[in-house]
Length: 282
Image (cartoon, rainbow, N blue to C red):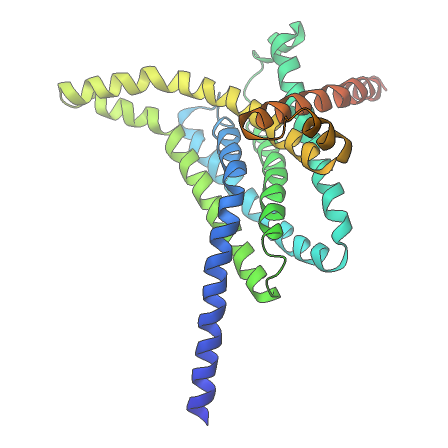
C-alpha cells in the first residue's frame, strides 16, 4: 500500500513536470520578443558609468528585477483568479508609461535643454531606480503574456512555470547585460597579448562604443514597440483601424506599433510635462 502510494505520488510529480516543461516552452516562445526589448533597454543603463561601477549597477538592477518578480508573479496569479478584468488596464498603464518615457528621451535628446542634460554628471542612483521601474513594466508584460498561455493549466503548474520564466529570464537578461558592458575590458585585456589578440582587442574597442550607441537607439525603439504593441492589441478601435488597412501582419505590424507608441507617448507628454513643470514651480 505504501509503495503504491509512493509510485502514485512519483507519477503525479512526473506529470506535473511534463506539464511545466511544455507550458514553459510555450510561454518562453511568446515572451521572447519582450525579452529582447528588455535586454536592449537594460544594456544601455550603464552608459556613462565608470568601468568599476558597471557590474555593481547591473547587480543592483538585477536584484530589483528579482524583487519585481516576487511582487508581480503572486499579483498576476491573484488577479487572474479574482480580478481578471483588471489585468489589461494595468498592462495598458504600464504601456503608457513606456511610451511616455520613450518620447521624453527623444525630447531630451533633440530639444536645446536636452543637450544640456548630457553634460550632467552620471547619477547612478537615478539610473538604477529608472532601470528597475522600466524592468517592472517589462516584467509585467512578460508575466502577463506567459500567463495567457497558462489559462488551461492548474494552479501548481502556473506557479512553477511563471517562477521558472521569471527567474530564468532575469538571469538570462542580466547575465547578457553583464557580458556586454564588460566586453571593452576584455578588449583591453587582449591588447596586452600577442599581435593577433591585440588586433582583436582593438576591433572590440572600436566596435563597442558604436554598439552601445546602437543599443541606446534600440532601447528607445523597444519602449515604443512594447508600449504601442499593448495599445494595438488591447484597444479595439486602434486594432480594428490597423486591421482595416492590413497593418497588423508581418513587419508592418511592428512599424504600426512603433507609430502608435510614439503618438501615445507624445499625447501623454503634452499633458504630463506641463503639469510637472507647474508643480515644480510651486
